[in-house]
Length: 219
Image (tube, rainbow, N blue to C red; front, side, top):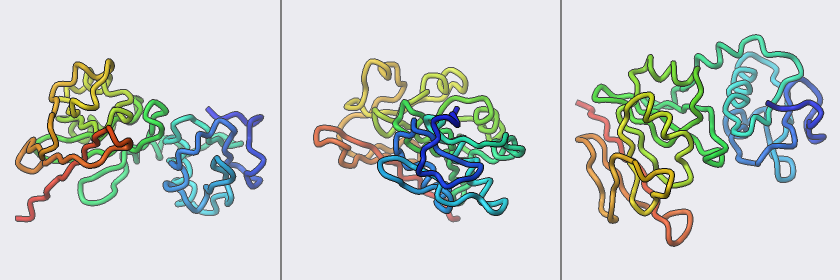
């Protein structure tokens, strides 16, 4: 959790603040851009929430901060309501999970809800409120890991939901050797009728990163 004694001086005065443990992952700045901005090499609050929407977005960013670097002076009264709203709808049946993990350097994770079984794209933190909500949404059939850096709590999700994990062999290391579906080569991989995985250039020239192409049946 954030500590008031570590509050950055760049924050505007008020309830919300970012402390010095921020790793500049940008999560809060795109989840609540009207409140959080960049100040130096870290984030800071430049505008305190003035309505319910801004406050809810700021609290979602607080929950999603991978280093728990966002805090409030006063204890939030509606934090449980915000917890109930994660995963948050992005479009159609795609949801942003929130709860980013420091193990994945703050990478975002998404849940694709589908009748044939849900797909979790990369791993968020394994926390009870999120796990409970994913259970209510139908659980997880596949946990698709796009890159070696974005695996976070993959084993906990595997153990809890019994999902099959998918990762390219070039991205496998000691912590992911037990992944159930190990892809190889650079050709597209058709996992199901509506799920195609393709390779794209990685973060480093010797790495391969995979992305998902989920095809919506418009019939």
